[in-house]
Image (cartoon, rainbow over all chains, first blue to last red; front, side):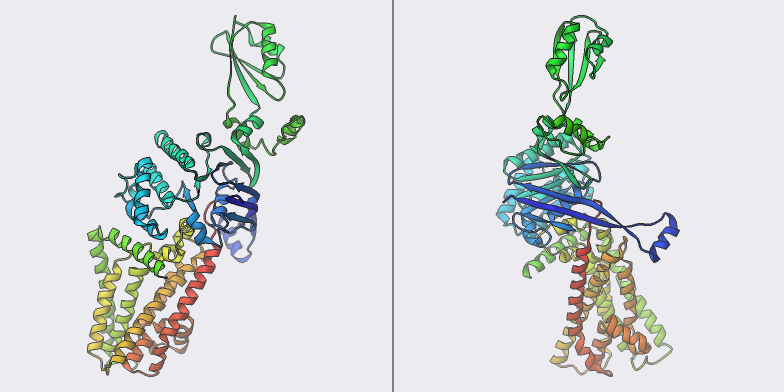
Length: 350
Length: 262
């Protein structure tokens, strides 16, 4: 069985529906009306031990709610969850020892206590032996530079320091699976790099990771599998490479031409393709859809007009794909194969 | 259970150490607590300068009563201060982390703070109890001493349970401040005077509905051998009931918790 198993996971929140203003509020007191809101809508997910999964989607897609359902913080409206064999919201204590959680937006450190005291309290809660605790602290100090932070009261920490201390708190008991909800939010580049480095090391140690993020760098650096959700539903689940292959249909070719050539001439020869002039008169960039054109066709087309000196084909970026999802342009998972063009077309919002 | 108590003790200890770092704060709070008890005393003396007794309660007996209430009230800030932050925690979705730790959520909530004004209440209330006992006519025996201590423990348990119960209402009420708990506990202030001065409705409310009468009035009545003193001996039973109720309501509330954001 997988480490994490979720089936038909659904969470419906009930929100009071009020007309605006004081009148609306008063009316609501007498006549209560509620609106149902499906934050997570029938998600199936299974994660094997040792996997690192990026959980991606626009704001409000249901990422955090999913994490809260998987960790047992919220009780699902329907559907089932099993994490390492335990049902998180009923076997809370058992589940707690298996998991580590970090919500990047909020700290788990006790606000008024020095970091050292917070970690000691967690040691007591997780029943860690003094030897194990010491060894873990040393290990975490190595990668997170914890020593300087230990005597500092949580509320005096900078954001970067806080995130490092919070990572230590989440990982102190060496959990099997770690959920990270936006672990690099608001961090500067150097701290971000450090956190990512740390996550990579965690993965190498065999820890299972699931992270939600808006930072695509996090995904490329840390994860091999990506799950994309939108409006509470899963729209892609597979290896990162496969996602690029399947969705990143736009290719960009930069050409160094033998002699200056007006772009109109090239565009005439290459219909349905975007041709843009570069900085120099001999430079030109061609952007094409790899489902309708091959790179060979483009080169052949250009060669009909002018000799090519150099060419460079840009790597597809996951940014392109994720941006499309965020913009609501990608709704269904098109299947690869002969029918993919049609599927892709119908998969796009008209 | 032992593990739970250890976690509670460690958490409270850590917060105590944190509070003690601010020396001025500590003294101000202690004095504030003390002042509150002195005000109670002044009020009582003002009343008793006009009447020799209040429904059969002499001045020292009334002081004993108010002192007991004050003393027990000091235990709240010292041992259960974190409970008052529950409303804010629910409102801000801050129970997320307690829910993913292998320790009872209630213990984590209750021990997440310490209020030093409780020390002032303990000192002030303790002194008033001392004065009351020294100037009242009590037939002391080992059984009476044991009984008094048992009733005091039971009365403290009732108050702490009521604090939990009142604050657990925030799971339903919402909002950032424990309005319901404040109202509930403040109403209890009436229990620092002899209950017999109130009408039947008030007496019934404080005996059955919200058992404030068991925090000071009935235990003190038993100790002083007042009318229907035997009711005081029910205090431990009421305490058990209150603990049960508080835990039940907290648990039910926790199931309603739906964090913040989504």
